[in-house]
Image (cartoon, rainbow, N blue to C red; front, side, top):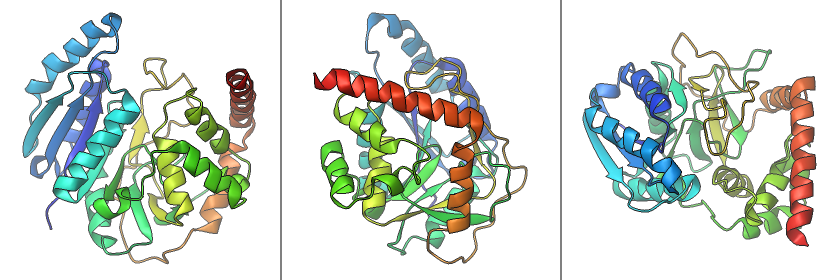
Length: 303
């Protein structure tokens, strides 16, 4: 079975991009994989110099079966860049592995995603494969399913991406009409509903919350690893959409993740563990801060 092409979305962070590429090159399947890089154009003059530095580096990248560089002539922004890029690739190849420029991968990242893509290719209940897992203290199964979809190192098929609904208003209304707000918020552990409302009002431009909502409302599942194959280096105030929160940064697995037959349903024990992770004191305070901040912004935007 052909390997999935890798879509890498970059903007203006040269060192982050270098680190992402260096880690990806260490994957066993890198030399057999096609890498497609989407370079967004600067949104203003201030970003121009850094975007140009990234673009001068991109042609130097080797270590893959092929490297294709797509230079956007206008600024798409992260959300539109990913939505458009993923749509283009799945239309051409039928599947895709998606990375952003602040994600460091394990050497077993490509192996896990490609194996899982093949294993669940014909299972309509599975919408995507995810390579990151929260740094919980409790042990998790080797692989498990959660309802919805996620955004830090993931893969999907054309059949999965066709369920993506870009209209946040439609998604939020469906969640409210079906009384799913609390379940959508991980039992009240994380304010995804407010995040979606913020996207609608233009307070954030999250494609990820719409991807999660699209999968959630269609009762689709995402496969997660019990040990993380991705870590995020973007929580250093360098990104457009990230801060300096280190609570999500975990250790990369030093061994491969085995993709085996498991029950295709949401793992309630794993869901409970992740809810507990979000309710830990420091993270709970951060989430509470987000709720208050989003509430204030929403009220202001509605006046």
